Amino acid sequence: MNHFADRLTDAVRTYKNPTVMGLDPIVTYIPDSLKENAAYLTDDPEQATGLAIIQFNERLIDATADIIPVVKLQSACYEQYGLSGLSAMRLTIDYAHEKGQLVILDGKRNDIGSTAQAYANAYLDQSRLIDGTVMSAFNADALTVNGYLGLDGIQPFIDSCEKQGKGIFILVRTSNPSAGDLQDLVLEDGRTVAEAMADRVHFWGQNLIGQSGYSSVGAVVGATWPSEAESLRIRMPNALFLIPGYGAQGGSAKDAVSGFGRDGLGGLVNASRSLMTAWKKHNMEPDLFDQAARIEALAMRDALQQALRQR
Amino acid sequence: MNHFADRLTDAVRTYKNPTVMGLDPIVTYIPDSLKENAAYLTDDPEQATGLAIIQFNERLIDATADIIPVVKLQSACYEQYGLSGLSAMRLTIDYAHEKGQLVILDGKRNDIGSTAQAYANAYLDQSRLIDGTVMSAFNADALTVNGYLGLDGIQPFIDSCEKQGKGIFILVRTSNPSAGDLQDLVLEDGRTVAEAMADRVHFWGQNLIGQSGYSSVGAVVGATWPSEAESLRIRMPNALFLIPGYGAQGGSAKDAVSGFGRDGLGGLVNASRSLMTAWKKHNMEPDLFDQAARIEALAMRDALQQALRQR
Image (cartoon, rainbow over all chains, first blue to last red; front, top):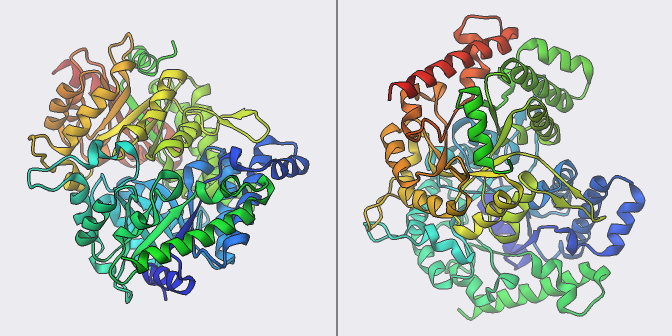
């Protein structure tokens, strides 16, 4: 089944869980035991940081891979540690795949023409090296993208969806306080900028609707704006919604599922900090972060299932 | 002088040249001689590709560093070759600095809160490693960013401008055919989305205006839309304009300088393909790509100077 939205919908059905675990490692989240172990293995602080990140991620994946079908890597968190961080990103993507999970790379990439193609090559497709061989730089299943540049900034990613069975999530309505600076501006036809973006996403995704009824061209729709999520669902009936803002950013399970389709599918709810630092909430030792994440992941799955039943 | 817009304006005055050389290596641009040399140095095709890119870039910089004050690296072109490509990106940034050039990283990054901060750490600031030491992942002078997420997606970059003397260029009007899909939509108050973004850029940059009269919060304004560049200049009198689209994308020197300030400054004109592949236009051997780039760079400088005089 080489269609992203179908693969994803199938995984969510199998796990009975639309949770995405955000793997956004910030060094202060990593317990001392892992830091000390990494420092024992190498004297180079950059390499040690990369090692600690990959071990942190692998333990989170090991503890939750039977519960959570999808992980999302926040590219910025890896880029900030240079080549060691990016090496950890690459290894994490491959590790999650080994454990049967789908991987979304949250890079919010955007550019035009050949440059957009280069981003598609980097994350969804392959790149041709100087000797003619091809390589996969970072082998994600889907990438978040920003649509401000219009269709010719999106087309290379759509091609990857068609030809490689990959997916994209286009930013429509984000979960941050000042999201409205641009996204809430009202057009002369009465739509907001976010609604205009939603209409583009719907249009761009029409040729990529799978047997699940969902398109491999999805949308990022913040969970902190539940009423908007409902109205955006009407504009994008076939879009998978990637929903940030659950937990630490203030969105509840009820808010988070407000944008799901009537079939109880079509949405993915991301939690990063609330899973990675669950040991704090549960008064556990920092070194038990992975077991705390598992407890929190089960609670989140149950809360989302309940919220979906009660709609 | 730790103010980006002042440093940049000073460099443009000294070189009498507002050209930015885009270093966007695509393997087909690299002559066979460099590819063969890289393959001689390593059997690993990824490493060989990274080596060929860095040698290609260094020769372009060597041939033009006395003419062109600024280089711009298109991040996507490096990311597509994974860690070897990103290593070449890091080395190119440092090499351009050694040659006295300013470096813009064209990453069009965008995110919120701590993630936007991580991007700022990665490209403009520093990151704290697990042992408490700090590192500079990619030490650019300025970064292109996308403002769709509003102010709290921009604030961490503005902080880097203030505290580290760095700069940003926010996408306002891009040079691609479908730029208008979103950017030309008309708001109920009569402004286009691009004009609304321009007003934000002007507002966000007010506290970062230097002695040059220009702010370290700049704007990307495509050269293929000259009349728009003039009207956007009125909305953003203090913004440095980063102007893509010259040469290969169809913009002329006259078009390119239409958004400059009355002082003949405030604009940077990027050329990538027309410099990197100038050997074709001048019927030279591929291996003389660097000398061809120099000839083309001199012609471009003269054309821009003439266009500025004739306004």
